Amino acid sequence: MAGQKTPTALGTESIGKLLMQYAVPAIIAMTASSLYNMVDSIFIGHGVGTMAISGLALTFPLMNLAAAFGSLVGVGASTLISVKLGQRDYDTAQRVLGNVFVLNILLGLAFTLVVMAFLDPILYFFGGSDQTVGYARDYMQIILLGNAVTHLYLGLNAVLRSSGHPQKAMYATIATVVINTVLDPVFIYGFGWGIRGAAIATIVAQVISLAWQFKLFSNKEELLHFHRGIFRLKRKIVFDSLAIGMSPFLMNLAACFIVILINQGLKEYGGDLAIGAFGIVNRLVFIVVMIVMGLNQGMQPIAGYNFGAKLYERVNKVLKLTIVYATVVTTFGFLVGMLVPDLVVGIFTSDAELIDISARGLRIVVMFFPIIGFQMVTSNFFQSIGMAGKAIFLSLTRQMLILLPCLLILPRFFGVAGVWYSMPVSDVLASLIALVMLVMQFRKFKAAAAQVR
Image: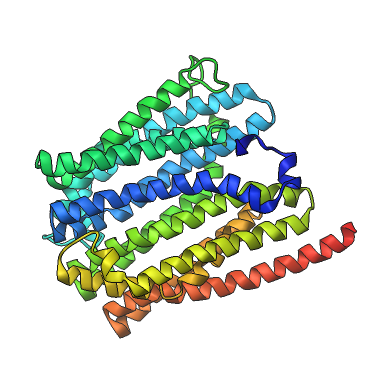
C-alpha cells in the first residue's frame, strides 16, 4: 500500500508513480464526497420540483458553516495525531482521539441549537423568499438534528486517514454515498417524504458509516482505539487541535460568506430561479474542484518530504506534474461546460427555464477554468512545503480580496450577469497573483540549490 512507502521511497521512487499511488485514493474519496452532495440535488430536482432546488441552494452556506466547524476539529486533531504518532507519543495520540470524539459532539450540538433557534431569519438573509424558505427549512431541520452525527463521522474519518488507514476512510466515504443514493428514491418517492426524505437519507447513511467507524475504533488490537480515560478534555489538546484547524476553518468561513453574497445578488437581480441555477452550477463545478483537491492531497507528502530533504529538483518535478494533471482535469471541465452545458444541467431538472439559466451560468463560470488548476495547486504547494501563511494568503485572495469587491460592484452595472462574471474575473486575477508568487519562490529554490552544490 502506498501509505506504507514512507519515508525513503518519497525521495527516491519515480515522481509520476508516487503521485498516482498517493493521489488516486484521495481523488476517489474526494469525488465520492462531491457526488454525495449531487445525489440529493438530482433526486430533489426531479422528485420535488424547481423551487425545491432553489430551496436546497439556500442551505449551501449553512452546510459550509457546519463543515467549517467540522474541519476546525477534524483537520486539527488528525494533524496532531500524525505528529504524535511520528514522535511515538502513543498515549497523547489516544487522548487526541478521545478529545475529537467529545469535541465533535459538543460543537455539533451547539451548532444545532443556535442555528435551529434562528433558522428562518438565517434562510431569508441567505437570499430566501416565501416560495423557497419552506423547502430549505424542511431540509435543514433534519440535517441539523443529525449534525452531531455528521461532525463525528467526518472527524473520525480524518483520524482514520492520519493513523495509517486512508483506504478505510475512503471506504467509509464511498459507503455513505452508495447508501444515500439507494435511500434517496425510496424516501423521496416511495414514502412520499419529499425534500425531508433526501435529508433523512443523508443522515441515515452517515449513521451506518459511523457505526462501522465505531467498530474499527473499538478494536483493541489497533494502535488507536476507544478505551476509558481518553475522553476527558485536555486544555492543551483542545487548544492545539483548534489552532491547527483554524486555517481550513477560516477558508470555509470565507466560502460561506461568499455564497451568501452570491445568493443575495442572484435573488436581487435574477430571482429564485437564478439561485437554483447557481445551486446546479455549484454542484457541477464542485466535482472538478474535488478531483484537483485529490491531486493536491497526493502531492502534499511528496513535495513536503523532498523539500525537507533539500531535493529541489524533485520538488520542482512533482509540482509541474501536478499542475499538468490538474490543468487536464479543469480543461475537461471547461470543454463540458462550454460544449454541452444543457446536457449536464439537465441531469438535475427538466424545467426548461431553469436549464436555460443554469446552462448560461455554467458557461460563464467555466470561462477561465483551464487556469484554475494551476491556481489551486500553487496554493496547496505552499502549504505542502510548510509556508502556511502564503497558502492562506492565496486562498483568501481569490475569495475576499477579489471576488468580494467584484460581487459588490459588478452587479450594480451589469445586473445578474455581474454576479456570474464576478467568478471568472476573480479566477484570472488570483491565478496571476499565484504565478508571481511561484516564480519568486522558484528563484529562491534555484539560489538554494546552487549553494547545496
